[in-house]
Image (tube, rainbow, N blue to C red; front, side, top):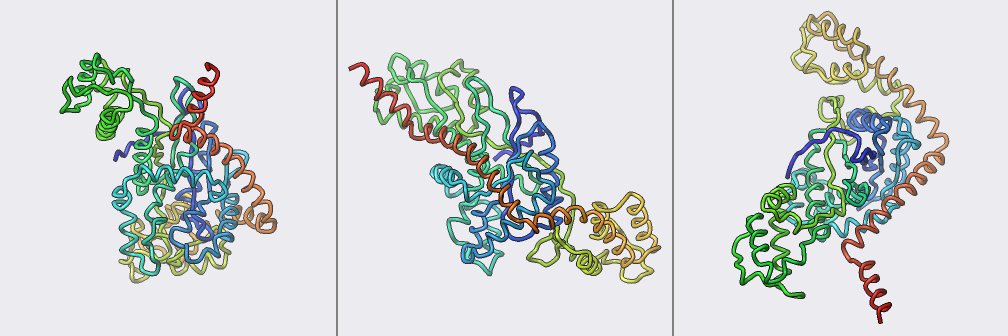
Length: 444
């Protein structure tokens, strides 16, 4: 799988690039969520070059919490309030709920038909979870097939391509540790497109085109065919086998390489590529280090997080017991701010003057850790105050948050329906079949 990274730019033909991301409703969001994702989402929505879709992945919550779904509705509301409090604007972004858009499930089903089981079993996070999560039974398709549903969530918002023109890009903003999640989506879509957005020219069927077909095979590196073997009448199983072999070869070497080989062999017009779905691209985003209060990754399950709704008193209590540089055991011991979680938080919330004060004071033992934590907490409280204030307003009127979510879901579903119309026709060809029937009846 490739790890190509795209920079955010205006889409093809001057169109807006689309951006898609979401979170599972597992509880109130914390400052790790803000700096890891929400901050970047807000930045992207404020750039007029992008059309942003942000969602609450409540189906994904079931992959691990299927045994007890009682908290999902409340968590969905709380995350929606956090989205709005953090600065997501329904006038600039489409904010929606995954489970009210059934087209996600339909596309997930179709993508699952072409996704090799081995791809899913080799996903590192799947294997790690099976080994490390002991309090839940994750041996179910929902958890195994998580990447397929994730792919559907993304590419159902593929920008449509006009005839003869390239579609605008589809981006997924992630940190470096999540690139592999997008890579598997990229490969699933590429495979899907090779089944349903790929055609061989019919002239390759006939004996008279044996030389052309031979050149075609040579260009792609397909061996084992002779002119006498290259007669593919209509309905021939040999033709279906040949198409399958060509498809497998293109999948093996990649579409871009295949096109180059075919051009070099002067047979590029024998293949038509009309991608049904847009291949998603990675957008690397800024993800500053923000460890939990105990130095581990910030997580609600570890009890080491500061939520976006945390009170001043709780912020001071939690930051007061934060771990610091382990080498600084006594007040008079100099420390190293570069290995101290408290200093990592200073970088996010404090002024330059305070940063300099904290770094110099730590290295010279001019200040104590308690003093350093208290100063950082002051800046954190100052930073979180407007977020918390916006949150309180929606907590008083939760119906407003749900109205915004419902309206966003209607907008998202309209886009999803359009995508599925194209997908269904590419897979089943019913409109083409109906046209054939209508035309045949007219000519009788």
